[in-house]
Length: 410
Picture 1 (cartoon, one colour):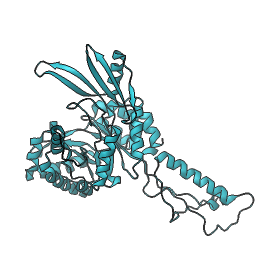
Picture 2 (spheres, one colour):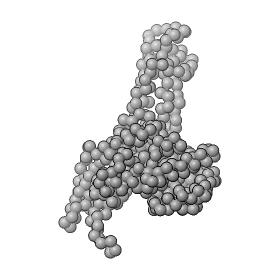
Picture 3 (tube, helix red, strand yellow):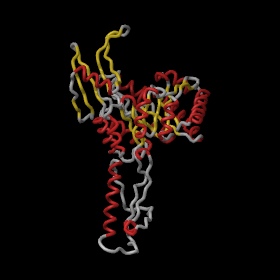
Picture 4 (tube, one colour):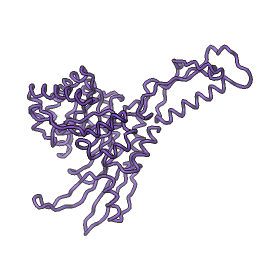
């Protein structure tokens, strides 16, 4: 698919277009300054500019066989390519297989959350063979995730303190990538205490060196941070155990790219709120760039799931507020049963809906086509960014795909 391929194209000179010689000129004006705009707009702009210069060179009547010495040359600005789209799939890929079949043409990398590692470095899991087949037929890279199961902090810390276990895990990743034809791996180690920040970095560097030697890639999913230490207890806990555990500049230098998980701003442990409000997403992205992550190594996290908060009674845990990730199909069911009307929050770039059920309120913050468009507009405001990483394939609604495909210029 055009949207997933790097385009390196140069235009024939205006004079050659008139004479039909078709000479391709490989340089562009030294004074030209690329202007950042969405990829589809750049395609149109370059085409229009070429047409104008061709008409100007041809003009009415016969043309000289000798082109002018200062004939302008045009080329797609260096480094410009369609944004990369990494799409996460839960588990081994079975739960998102049909959606992947339908939309593989809009996906560059599929990333099933399929492998787990224990404290001794033993890796278990696997990717559904059918997903591998679909990916191969569509030219989509497969980059599975490796996780500390249940985001178990003690387990991961034990692995970091176990040199033999680390080496065993690294060697297994290389072997599995070679055996199954993976593009590489993505680390998804979460709930890591800030005191293990350097250990995580060294393990990532060790793995990157081994995978690169084998011809494979390595990336990492990073819980975003603004660099603060946290003032209120909740924020301090999140910064110490989730957000400040990643030396993003060092990770970017060692590996191939970072997925900045700019979603889950609000979730189960929090009060109701946007999954990825635009001001928060911008603050997290600005910090990642400020600490030294190159834009072309930064993949912008985008949610396809929505959030539902409601009061609940559990036999063992008693009364509590529940916050859940829900797919768009469940959003539609709740809207139909409640009769509630969503309200667009322009500053946050998301729909909110609140309704009463038996005397208490329930909330939803909805991710769909309009909210995706708002996030892609924010992405476009950052020159040179690598692409987006979407969590998660099976949650996307029908409005998601046309917006994504239009943005990719398909």
